[in-house]
Length: 573
Image (tube, rainbow, N blue to C red; front, top):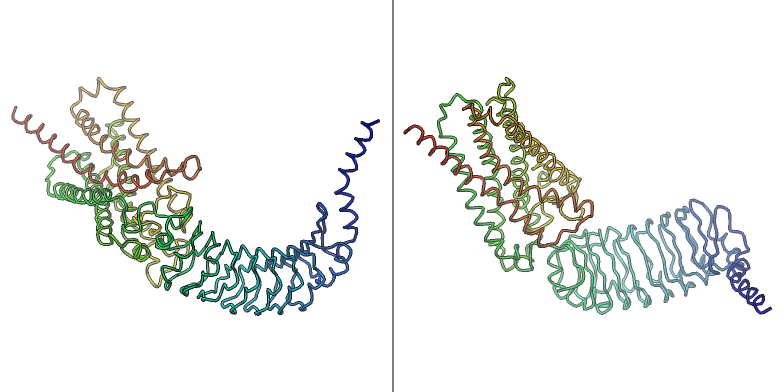
């Protein structure tokens, strides 16, 4: 008996929410609207309809509406008392309508309203008493309106407001009284406005409550340092200015984050600056010597293979020389801005010099990979098919290398054209190479700056293809030499080719060791299989990529000296 009674009680309890809901929401919604009742809370959604707000009055009398969504309902104007009967309303969405003006006190009856969404309207001005009576409001969204000014004391009375979205495009100045009354505000979104000036005291009303501030996409120019210092509980700051992160001190998240720089120095690790300068100078000396020596060297040999290889090695030295120029530019900028970098960070990143440095770095790296591809293919053809007539001669080599340089000059400097006043390639944004202090467009993080797909195509796709070609070429040479070892040793000409292959294999191997980690890390970053630690990213970008430009010319010199010594000994004998 007791078991039966217990089961009956359980059934009754489980049926209570449904019964209550049914009793509350028996009324039928107006035409084109859908209504639901969940746990006794009435929600009405009217979309893509011309249904007037006044039609909801009768429904509300029977089924109190707590959440009203009237997005895209073509509403343009409404009377000041339109919400007077909706006293139980907690959430109101008027998103994407054609509202141009809002009457004073229109929301005054909504004492329990905690969320108001007025996103994507045509509102250009707001009445002073628009938010009067909304003492329970916690979230206010005014995103994507035509607002550019706000009357003083507009937000007075919104003592419960915690989140304010003013991503409205046209705000130019944050006045000292603009946020008067917002003493409980925790999140403020001011992204993508045109804010140039922040007056003293603009953030003082919520200095102890604000935890998240968004200022991205604003060309800030005039503000006091203590404007941000007074935000004592700030945890997250998003802006386009590295300096602001220095002003607010250590917080949970501050963007833009620059893993290379500190508030004082362009390169926060002094050893990196020294290494970049030393590597740059050594690379200039080494590559200039290689280029001059090979240009002055008289090759009386009739071996077309050797002459083609000399052309390729000279071009490789030229591309490495460009990397040396990049290193000297960055290390010189570090010395010039030392001790005050945060003050000039935006100026440096937006400068033509930074963009030029990034462009020649890209040009250097990609021309090196391209030249190594041609060099590897040429060696593979000559070793595996020694008697073929389809060889790369000097004329063809110069044409291929010339076209390659032309293509990569265009691709590398295309984003820089935006620095010219009469050019606007929107895809690259204003500052493709200036996303970090060392002016490199490397896709080794998950950040998505304008033109990031372009960077992936160059740094990962092309380089990956290049090293596949190089790897296949040398594997082909290896197996060919192994298979025909005895025959090769009996032919003097083939011995000379193989000796040269062994020498250039080391050059190719060092290039591979420098660039393959970049490709691998880029792939891991894009597939989200590994988040690259900041320390590894810094050393990879500033040292691993660039050290190769210094090693190569000294390898050429060493090989040349060994060849000359061996030739001298043979002639003596």
